[in-house]
Length: 207
Image (cartoon, rainbow, N blue to C red; front, side, top):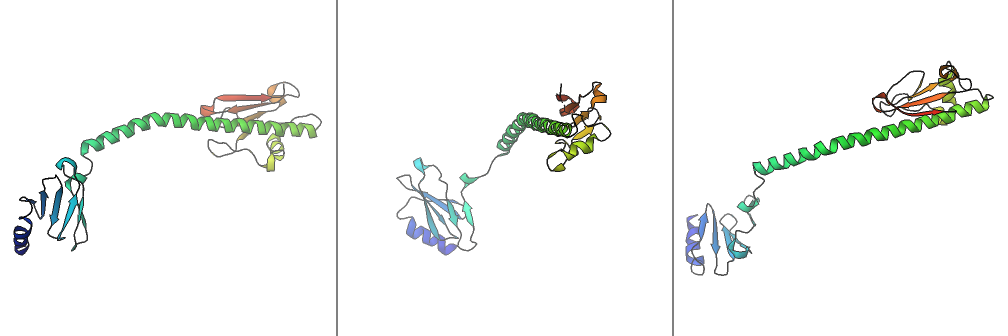
């Protein structure tokens, strides 16, 4: 280190003003506001094009450790800045979450309505093959399933279970079938679709 400082004094000081040394790195500013930074560990200069003599952003490479050392202008976020970012993210989450929930429920209710139409087609197909009579409650589940595409019952979009019930009442995501006896009218049936919070969102019938 003593030899390096001696070399600095004899070679560099003749052409440049006195350097300002900070730790093991020296910074020199020329009359044209260009800055030169010398790192004794790397044993070389790093020229910075800082406008107006302001501290530029540069990195010095250490030949011994192989580590880049950033200048003080490359510091990270302050605590206040991080807190502001967290608050902004919280506000955005508070705004977006209700909208996301509403859109999700609408999509599920649309799926329930689609299940209702599929079950209605199955009921009408059964009636066409049975001289206009509709599935009775005792065998309605199997009769409707036999006339659904692929003989597969519809799926409840809210819980992934079976989406069809026979006189089961108000259940979230369910299509409830009521036969003519339950409706109280001959040759009449009813399909009630229930959405969010088990509220009826659609009723399908043949009259």
